[in-house]
Amino acid sequence: MARWFYGLLLILSVAVLLSVYISPLHVPLAGLLSLGIPLLLLGHGVLFVFMLLSRSRWFWVPLLVLVLSFPYLKATFRWPSADRFQEARTEETLEVLSYNVHLFRYNREKRNPAEFRESIARWLSEHPADIKCIQEFYQDETTASTHMIRRLAQDQGMHISYQPVQRRRQRQSIGMAIISRYPIVNEGRVFDNSRNNGVIFADIRWNSDTIRVYNAHLESMSIQAEALKDVEGFKENYYDVARKIRNGQVTRARQLAQLQQHIADSPYPVLLMGDFNDTPYSYLYFNLRQNLSNAFERAGSGFGFTYNRVLFFLRIDHLFYQEDFFDVTDFKTYSAVDYSDHYPIGALLRKRSGTP
Image (cartoon, rainbow, N blue to C red):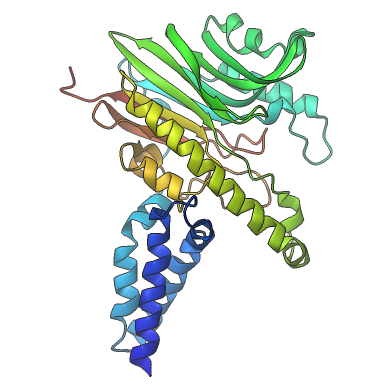
């Protein structure tokens, strides 16, 4: 009986682990299955310790699953290290930042959204990053306080590529922005969905090289996180949430194909960052890892959660880079900067030694 039980457990566990390699376009439920990977890792960790202490001869089953889970463990957690981010800055490093600013209108604890707008604008203006990718960028030219292109770029002597996705009025729009200390020599968009999602790019002259920076905001799931803050809310909204997760994963799989083709055609080394609306246990994440490296996995600390709402345990903002050109020296999640429903993420990179 035990042989059948542990055999079935092993088969099911491997099936869950392999679900990240199955496109939601072909099997929509595969994406839902992959969301169970964190619980799978936790469960097998507890089971392994229990079976080891009880001297069960079947301890090798959870041990084998944990060994097979190494790529997922690597994407989940890095041993915390001292924060030496600013100390690691040199003349040779390139500091980059990604931030979903929630239209500069985050409203929390019934506070005035204008307080958050001013806090986030001040923080972004003072941040020393050489390149800043901003999602949900709200531009309103009717007042000085909401003219963010001027405040965050022009007044700072920075270059900017702003791609509006949705225009509300003649002088008001929602879009995405790439702000750079270095000259922008080309710009454009990969796609957009006419709401506030999409991917844009800018070719930036960095010293003697040109690099291509992608700013991504992939399909949102439009889940009301507050509705899941207790057991009753979860029960009432379970099926609706599952449907939105499945539909979002299918749409992001289509967007991924467009993005990967654009990256493959890039004549320059690539940086890709933004709000991907997908966890590290997803088809999208593991596909991007095939050709790009993830900065958190190389230089992050802790769990690196980036979502600032009820579902606080999510890391859905990512930074990928082309490893044959860049080295990442440090990565940081700014979890103390709570002016939006996302935390900013940043990294220090340098040109790989020996690269022409």
